[in-house]
Image 1: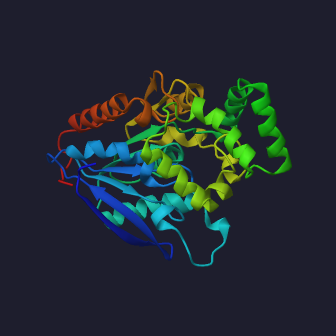
Image 2: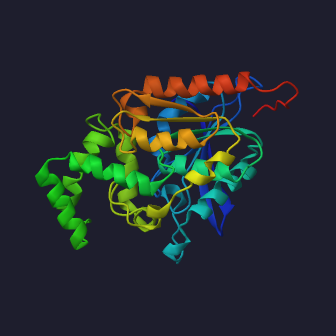
Image 3: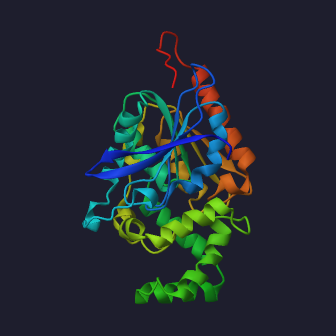
Length: 309
């Protein structure tokens, strides 16, 4: 990307959270966009395509605590990695960077985090965008079972054998799981460099992912398996855009649950895409978000304060 970036660190929870900000407001109405990456435990790199939106506004990325450039090297307990910690981190980033009014865009776990954050009723949340994010992991797991049943029988048998034996870190499991990833995580081959970098960084420091999620995208055995905020989504007041891919591991039926629960939300299914719409159809994904942001800002009520970002 050609945008000049400013990078830094903020103090959070006794550690340091790294951030990267690009672009500036093209008009007083163009509010900043804060991007929440997935995992939990991945890095900001799979959000890189959304730097394209920095031609109109300030776009902020960060590595969540324990991830990538925000890795924690000091002795610590893995039990510190919780949804609540990351909700507080979103607010800390906003406070530190002066994001008094902003949009929030989360992908996968980042969208789950964005929805959980929006439920708290934060001030100045102009809109929420959640890409490929399940509001209920228990329901999503039933959808994953359907997708897994459609894999070749020998592939699924190999996966189940390693999961039962607790050997999901084996080379055979890791190579076999790519049959699922190729269908439902990213259908572009080879993977874009920024996506490969995301998974390389995750593999180099998997503690948060293994602690909260589990060993793969479709074998969720950590505390996240009980994540279900569906009953609280009705309290989200911010305009909300939800989208996912036609072949997404987070199936349209899963995302539709959030759509039904969030008042006035918009829901879009990206034809031909799986979990990485920004890799498979970046024109559609970026265009959808760009149009959404412009629409929200154009609809701002008269008399509402307008601040340059």
